[in-house]
Image (cartoon, rainbow, N blue to C red):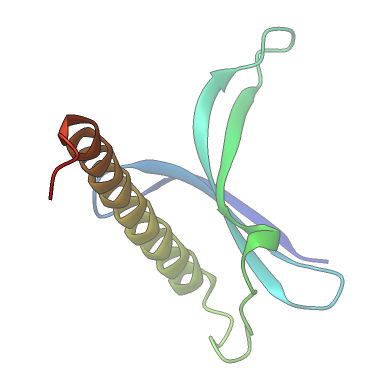
Length: 108
């Protein structure tokens, strides 16, 4: 079973990620994105938080990608950053909607 890991991978936005690419038990290539959160207290090892990919995502058919793991990793990071931006904008709209509702006097 293949498992590749690269840190840091720097996105177009300048954000550092760790990217793991591996084949699962069904032969589907998975690409997982992590962010660095610091060192562990006991052994001072790098610690990462899972952000995107893995079981949350239907894997890649690596043959269709011609086993271009770099392209697969870039695609996954772009998808994550797009999703994160959409979630952030949605949260802002939700907060504005809540404020507007709370300020509303209840009249039509």
